[in-house]
Image: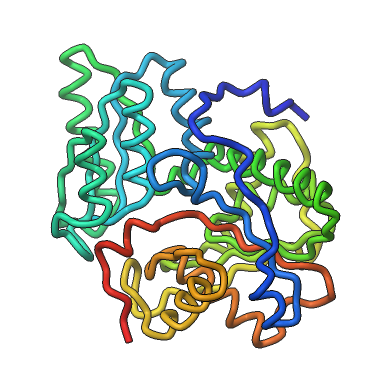
Length: 319
């Protein structure tokens, strides 16, 4: 296996992020529930994409890129974090965002502007069409002497997944130091964690909660396998080591009234904020599964907080 340090990486986040037990919630549910606070990674309002961007943008810099393109919904956390990281590195950031959801000057759209990104809202639903538009604009810039990096939605690439292989190693070290035996990790980002758990957390199962439609039960293992190839390590997950559960509600980037009580519960028991369309949905999905007895055994459960707080200032909690 290649050492993670052998891959180009630019340090953007403040790691390790906090890892601790949610005492009141654990008492309430009779099960040890822990949290990994990747919302406190030190860039913008934090989030999972910073781990991915440390590897993706390092490769872009090595290739001489000075301009970064990416996409997502109008309130995309990934887009805002890409803008923040590009600003840190002195790179121009161009965001081609779907004109869907909250498009007013609120939430992440305010942050995009603060970070100096150029934002273009597009009336397109197909990411293939958006990627084609990226390359059209980028082609013009490259003719003028710039070099562009094109990051797909969510930085969902093999190299991006390596960011959470590193994150899984970090979790393993913290769990050992805390003397906790984890049985399950639940997250909205799953590919890197699936590979990383196999490498550094043997026996730990990974549950991904999908807040968008798509064949993620196939996409996640494929990305994990591609990341394993990058690291030159085997990828043979144990049977039942991974499951993908959909918890999209009424639609992608739309809040779900059924999730509001869970978002309030975490805020009122632990003082932790979740947004209503991304991480809040992941947490609500996890708690519903817990109530249904989905997580077997007596080992503790880890929830990975992947950020998204800015959406609280753009989208009202539905009742």
